[in-house]
Length: 342
Length: 293
Image (cartoon, chains in turn red, cyan):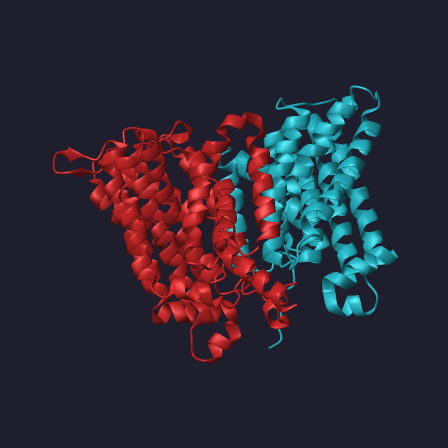
């Protein structure tokens, strides 16, 4: 039905990327405008939400968006799979949280510290791991995430161990504490907007173009003078820093963190969320993050069958729309035009 | 003397768990070879093997027979899974198969939970709970069964891959998909068979470890994870690599938890794993991929 050139199907990552249908490219012509429109609409959430619970879901969705979008930057655009994104998320959460609980450092400093610490860790892991191609980064990062979880659990004096980190202070503006969901929302809203803006601008920059070249054909990129190793490392470090920022937001909004949130299972799930949203699309992560946050709440009523429905849904989307939900309009348009032609 | 017997005890314990990891890693490697994908469902088959065997022991008195039937059933389940979720893929890229295997893992875990229950189950070992005195240390008979069965299975696998037509076809398809297809190997069938073998190997590991550790539906991720690490350690895609990696990981854990800290057992094992990966990227036995330009 949909024919793909051999050059495309040979590359696991470019296979999902196909030429944009014209109707969609018009949509894409003004990404900054659309970003503004969507985020202005989001601003209404605390006013229309029936209760604090829905606002808390919105906060969580936006924090998840930072996670998914930053992973998408690495996976969708650079073609590298990291299995420790939840680990970097946790590193940011614990860095910011522990600084706050043990040393009384304000979250406003904790947030950049979380970004820096996650970035530094990614740099140390990426330096040896990104020199090689293929599954190498996923293997190294899987081990790294596992080590982090053991540390979160066992450094009880620092992290509170399996019981979690308690007594984390919320963000505060002078004496005004952002300690309710509705008060925290504007901050989460702003930070997620800044992250999305940063990703958008990065993709349209020299680094972004280099990135696409590397993901499409590493040798070709090297041949035209792009340092593919450096490009991948920069993106890996940036995506970890963003995960760290998400972690800092998470720990101060929830005023709590516990190790199981940041396990390898979460990292694996995040990879799937990126794919389901639409790996390598700008808006895919928004769809993915919304589903990732809302679906478990919706499925809560089904109790034991929850996991099964979640897994089945995942399989159906992956089998029917391997390009992800953000490419469904394109996929349908292609089917439609193919029918008309035949 | 005291330290000598402690040392021996750790070696035996390490080889015991290492054998289990080797079996899981083997399953992992077979699928990796045929598809290039990381199969995240591998660990779920381990749990499934143990849980089905426990269920069968209610009606079959022989533990060995119950385990055998359970392992064959899970092997069939692996084949059916491939037909249901991998075969329908229009563009079965390595990445897509990896992602689909995560969905498969979630569904399998949930199926095990819904059908076989949430409670941990167990059964006696193949020689009851007998222990054997060996060079001054006490060893559980089941540990010896584990090592023995793993050995036999590895030999059978070796002969299968080296001698049988199907085994050769699998290797051919793994080496070069298109070339194998040209000489008449049905590549799709080799993927099917690799899922069957992987599920069989995983379930075998689960059936023989359950007498020592109990089986519970939520352990799959941990098993898969350990098997994956063992595969990396030995060299992904390599059959002897799975054995070396599994044993190395088992010994690392045993010695790490005894001499350093049992709390940090996993962290130590993974730190060493990372170091080895950074020094020898292709694993202990793996050959580096030389990509012609």
